[in-house]
Length: 340
Image (cartoon, rainbow, N blue to C red; front, side, top):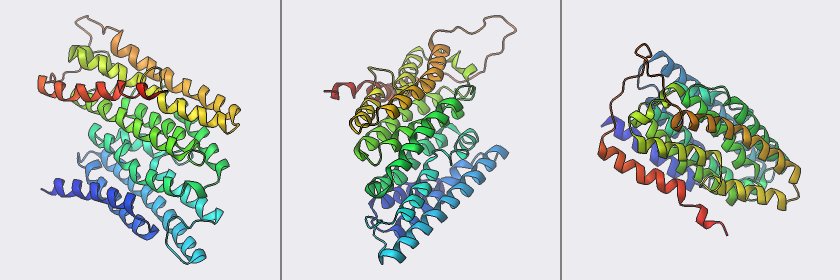
């Protein structure tokens, strides 16, 4: 009963934050959202989980302080808490830093890999997807008042650090965290020029990440070593996982390529071809560790000697597989047809 109430509070706080038009109400809803997710992070009562919950709370509290500071300063300058009235460059920049800190972009990204590693797979799914909706909606509202140079710099740094950070990771949750950082870079980089493209990118990422985490949870897959034996649990789920990883990496003609194509087109249209080229090159870093993971999942057989240890796990039931796979397959193939 208590878990259900906390989950309802998590959903309602996000909906109210996205529907609010006052910075005071938005700050209040974001605080409620933070307090609702903390019990899920610390539910396992493991020291790493408690550490993750503490890091998450401190980071979100700092971001909320910056958001309240920016909102209060803007209200003092303009006489209103209205979100659309942010003409001051300092307040809009402070608001951008606060909201990007909540989502986990460079340079305020260090908390995300540690928090995901200390959480369960389902909690990591919530942090990587649902918790980004409210801050992203607020950024969409103030996108026309944000300095373009600042968002372009944050976007390029996020795609670069996200790609480099995930290169040597053996823990899948940390790898997905750095993938999230890189994806947020793609989202922020066109926030001021074409905010609709940013929203398409973030929601495409959510659609692809959700079945990926669910497949990991159903097959108890947490490391690259576990990926080598995933085929023994469900060959069909293994194939779907490989397609989801490649789609998240942005490999054409899968779904994840569409928002990247739209963003590249917008950058070139704005005469930012050098920046578009550098961003495209940083995406190769993300593609490299996703290709490595896909190779371990589908093309590599584990050692078959009697001395090699294989992690035991319960096999997926047929019902769970049949419920999840249509969702994953649809999210992998549904959007390339929209390309003109």
